[in-house]
Amino acid sequence: MTRGQGQAVLAKGHLMSSKKRIAAVAITIAALTTGSVSVASAHGSGGKGLAKDTVLAELVNAGTITQAQADAMSKKFDEFKATMQANKAAHKANHEARHAAREALITSTLGIDAATIKSRLVAGETLAAIAGAKKDALIAALVAFETKEIDAAVTAGKLTAAQATTLKTNLTAHITAGVEKVKGPKGHKGHKDGKGKGHRQ
Image 1 (spheres, rainbow, N blue to C red):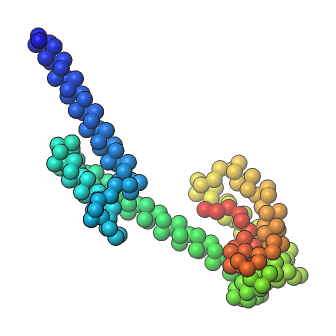
Image 2 (cartoon, rainbow, N blue to C red; image 1 turned 90 degrees about the horizontal axis):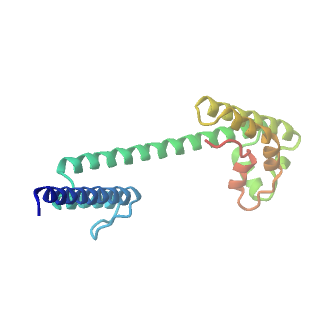
Image 3 (cartoon, rainbow, N blue to C red; image 1 turned 60 degrees about the vertical axis):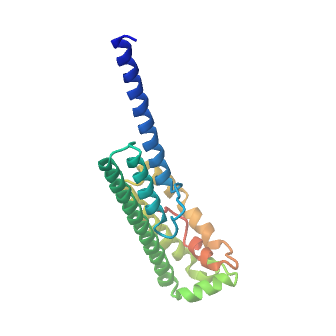
C-alpha cells in the first residue's frame, strides 16, 4: 500500500467515524426529544431526565461525544423543556382567561348567574331559550367579543388579515348556531360552544 493509499484509507475511516458519531447524536436527540429513550431505573417524573443523563454519559464513555458536548446538549434539552412548560402554562392561562371573559360576558348580558345557566343547559335548554328576549343582544355581544379576539390575533401576528376576514365572514352564523344548539347532558361543554367557537388562540 502506497502512502497515498494509506492516507485515503485513514481519511475514509475518519469520515465513517464522523458519520457514525453524527448519526448517534442525531438518534439520541430524536429519542430524547420524543421521550422514547428509557432505562430500567427511569420511573416517575424524573424518568426522562435520568434517561437523558444516562444516554449522554454512555455516549461520552464510548467516545462518541465529548463531555463538553454532552453538557451543552443537556443544557439545550433543559432549556427546551423549560420553554415548552412555560408555553404550556401560558396557553392554559390564556385559555382560562378567555373562558372566564366569555362566561362573564354571558352572565352580564343575560343577568343570570353562571351556575344557573349551566344547570339549565344540562337540563336540555338551549342558550337561546335561556336568553329569551335577550338572544339577539347575546349574539351581538359574543360576535363583538370574538371580533376583538381576532383583531388582537392579527395585531400579535398570529393571523393574517386574510385569515381574519375569513373568520369574521362566518362568525355571526357560527355563534348563532352555537347559541341555538341543544347541549344535552354535557351542558358544561355545550356552554362553551354556546358562547361561540370563534378564533381560538
